Amino acid sequence: MSDSMCDDKTKTRTINPLAIVAGLAVLGTGAFLAGVTASAQDAAKVDPKHYKVEFENDQVRVLRITYGPHEKSVMHSHPAGVVVYLTDASGKFTMPGGATKAAVTKAGTVVWVDSTVHLPENTGDKPFEVIEMELKTKPAATK
Image (tube, rainbow, N blue to C red; front, top):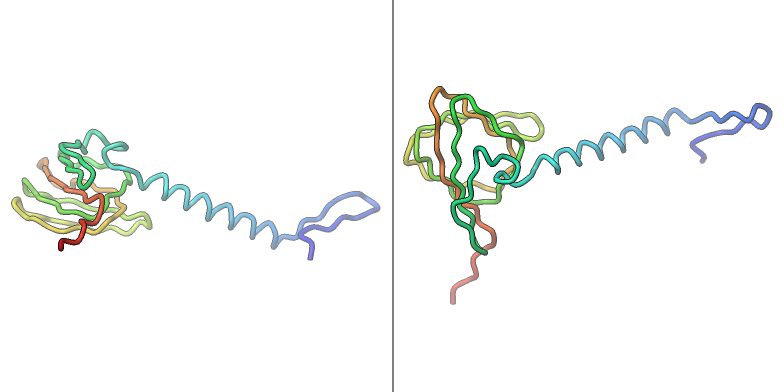
């Protein structure tokens, strides 16, 4: 079945409206996925104001994360790792689909984090500082 029809008398082409809708849907989905992929970038590269690489080797990367009051980042990604809160922190994480999650954490808290894509924001009136240890590879099994 053709997506268009040609009238031989007028030499005009009529395009099936369903074909237009399907084409726009494909283009829209591609643009959305490209936007999420482009947004889900390395935090230290897309937001060096807040993310500083303190140490890196073939197994781990250690980030120092600092946010001033009410500062916001950009959408970025992290692999799985461990986060150590050096100060109290009040924040909000916005996910690629728009869902948000509030987080209030005390200084000294140590947590495991799965890989993620998010846009963090300091919702508090004080700056906060965090150390994040991002794992690059799974450790080899010990014998």
